[in-house]
Image 1 (cartoon, rainbow, N blue to C red):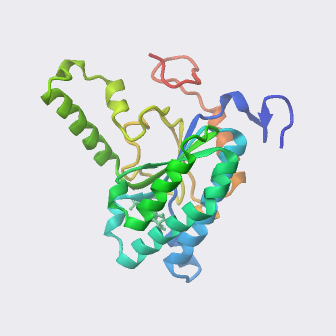
Image 2: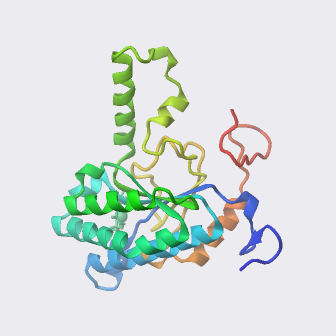
Length: 256
Ligand code: IPE
Ligand code: IPE
Ligand code: MG
């Protein structure tokens, strides 16, 4: 896999994103194309999750956020929601060993308390077991909505103002970032959406202010490591200006 120094799969390892976020979309259409039940699409999609986690780990990308279930997805038919919850629990069970071996720390972004009790318990257990792993952070966005996340942050800040702990004029961008579910993590450099939809669907709206966005027509179950590498290759060719005039690609996020 390694060729020249500093190169993996032909990528410049010094210019890889620190945080990749993925809107894993198209499971239902993948199944429909094959005259299968949507469940089959979700099953196949959960195998792709494995692939992409392994790829990020191998490439030493330290943060990966996967949009697995949105606040709006609760409106889906009950049977589909319960399939997704079941697959999620299965994923947590089957990947625990791998996460421990590979030094992956699992984190949930979203309203964990809204998930079924057994899934919540498994997620909390996995988070506790993996919390000292330092090679990579895997964020699963579950019952996640960016507007809800921002609303939660506003509530937390308003409480501090109400108790006199914080003056309204002292609220700044960093403070808002620190009250989001992603507190302490770098903003995503790269957001990928599969299945060809050109929208963010309430995903990381604050954090993606300067993310590079890639939309691929590939349906999530068909997404491969090769396509991921291809997207990273294109990402490395993009000129990230952050509102400035010269080519600028800081490794630690936005210039201040
Ligand atoms: C993504 O695939 C998985 C979730 C949103 C949970 P979809 O289920 O949205 O698949 P499509 O968009 O119907 O093809
Ligand atoms: C976004 O996909 C949510 C996830 C991938 C979990 P959706 O399929 O729910 O989004 P829309 O409905 O196409 O916007
Ligand atoms: Mg969809």
